[in-house]
Length: 383
Image 1 (cartoon, rainbow, N blue to C red):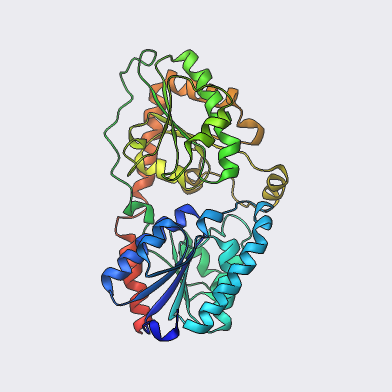
Image 2: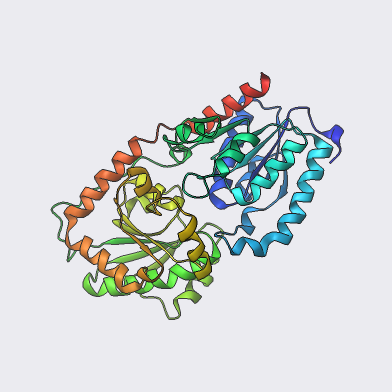
């Protein structure tokens, strides 16, 4: 692409995982509504590719998590950073918008600083949870950060950062919670709908899918009408999940690809991987437990650097244990099944958790988050 082929108003947006791709795509859409002539170049995933004017690389498909696993991606990331530097030098974008994914994006921020290109961070990394020294770097390298939790502006202010809260962008895509009551139901004969959310990354899926499936098999012994639904991403290969089961699937087990959260909102309970999915579940008002299994060296490092008491976003925001968390060896099929069986035996507990989750939803703002952020970015650039 020649420099002369781009309008003067061009913006580079970089996201590196599935959730970042989704929210960045929504931001691109809102920016194009407000200023149709603007040119958006994107590095991200399939959703950004659909919305952007030019697409440079599918970084979301390469996502790595933890402390050790990303090291394997370093050769790829170095090549991509060279490509980004060349793009910035040749096309001189008016601004760069980074979306979460700090491990890669902080290098993009450094490149932009050297070339004197202003940076906005949409969905700023949750540095309050670990390695808080990064907040100083973010303050230095960004013009403005758009944060997704109400307490974050005050946190970043301590380090000199300019952070604004317009609400959580999940509210733009999540439906209203479905009508649901657990009270006065015959738990033993009820057709329980149990959702399994083993994550979006290969490492998460490979570790949690077998544990969740074996937990379901124990649950169905106590509640024979239980139906289990494993939620896979739209482009996921279902055979990979079946291979992880190690046996012919139980007749009550189903692999589904949900659209617009319709089926997930109908679940009675969810076994969820720690991450964005837990907050999505909360916004739907669906009770859950949270499980996480990491590569052992990664877990040892995480214990040293993570500064928050809980791993679930729900519990972090509530500042108390709303949902049970099971990490490493505690995320065994037997322990997970025991927790679910106890909840099914006591529907009042399910209803109480649902009520707390819906209170949390109310604290995270109103829909229209991407539109408000897009408007502010464009106004800042005009100034």
